Length: 524
Image (cartoon, rainbow, N blue to C red; front, side, top):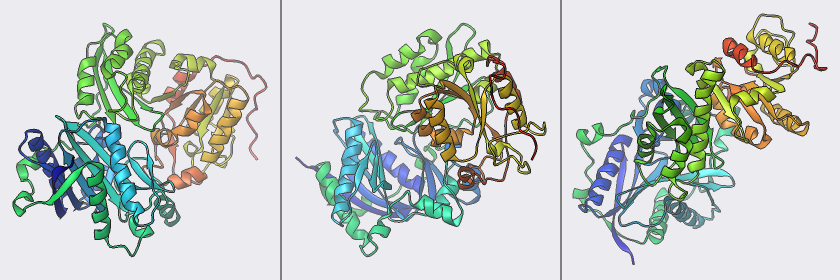
């Protein structure tokens, strides 16, 4: 049976006003004061973050401010996005909805796929919420359920301004050189590129038809009185900066975890002297049916004894993964385990909270940091930490001249009989990890920025070895938008190793003499 649903073509306006309209209609629909609604619209240039993301970790806020790019937070989850009038957006608000969030996301993607097929395009669904053509994204959908009412956001790329997108988002980006922009654009499949002669109105009508079919809607045009956008009061209620971790509170420990499905989980916590959770907060690009999911989980975990933290997470989340696709109880438990390990590392390894927060732990075997250090036999160093003037910057060696922190890293590693390697290109990293695994390496230490760790997480996961990585400072290639140069081995700016943290960590790697490891080379 179809449901009577208003159809609204809202035109182009502020993203905040569109989001406020959606939020207001969702609330009124849940109160029984509004009917179901499907509306199409465009936005002025803006960036939006998912409901659960830490805004300072996702956006280049200074750039957005200077360029007049609006910043908004969706009521739906998911990742950060750049919007402009070149994207066709739609919102579906439908009451009395059943089923799981994962099925709603897939249903919306299937409707988009069907609409595209009418124009000869063969698209596919990528779990949990994307539509792709030959591996290139053309659309994404996001959803939440409030008091039994589904709100679903959809974004379909008619065209894409790659430069504007990459400059606004803090997520690991691709390159901004002419060649790099072309490569980054290859990640997307805008409709205008595939169907340059098809009117946008025809695509919108096809979407209306397929969404109505998928969600059993009987569409009727909205009256003029139902098209008014909300006023200033509704706009001020939108919590764009509600999750902001930019403060320098030294009591927090921070960690991250990327799930097998590619969902990024961030966590920060403080612990009491009595061995309990003081505070714990999560930030993520996950999607959940319950908009209060993370808030509820955080409140439930406060005051829990450390030893019961993982058990409490599993109990509160349960086994149902359909309403948080791509992130389950085991993923949140893994993140909590890393936070606990860092907390204990502050005691057993003598680390400050700031130092522990700078460590990134990847352990398929769930090993603690101390155990990884005890077994580490290889050290991987990024070439970008070598000075730009160094003749060894682009070579897999170091003569330990004493003029930079990399020489100290080599010295500390060689003293302990470790194989120390400079990673110059991403492909070399993959090859090196494969060689290490083939020769029986079980654990290693290294340095890289957190952006690289997140974006290239797959390489670390597929290697299957335990790793303890130290975040690097200074001229980060992601901040300078020169990742293409970094991956190719031609990045010229300099990153900085935390020498104090490095020296401290290496105290826990057992010395093994030289063991036949390579001596430092002579200057050519």
